[in-house]
Image (cartoon, rainbow, N blue to C red):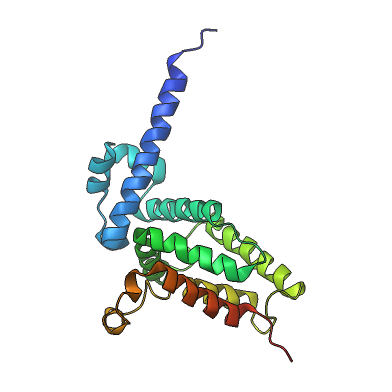
Length: 203
């Protein structure tokens, strides 16, 4: 049997093209949301054919699901959760502060997925299930307040980590001069808020 030496190269090109599509789609969804995104623009940016994109990912909703899964995988790798939930919150803040497009995609996801609840892949919920297990462990070990349900605590942690990035523009205007660009000040605020939220109360 003759094995083509071109096959690995073809597979590599295919993986590279898929990655370009995911990157182009991420930028497109961050800018326009799911409803406003266009496969034509994604294909042009990624230097890929529309037909190939549809063959790989399915329709636009399925492509968005892939983008979200890719983003969640990157986040889990860059900011792994552990039982020190205060510092986890701070690291989340830093991650989102470095790339605001991540936040924009997340906001579009909230709008899109709320309207189409249950249509996203199981892989996306599995990542959150893992985080909830870590939170339960932290609570069991006395490192996190048991006053919250794990789901509530995770939602609040995410809210604290992204609080300034999602604050209304009017509030940003009224903020202390320089606070919006002072990452150290933002980080200190996030750490203190997370500490008050996470640490068990002395009874």
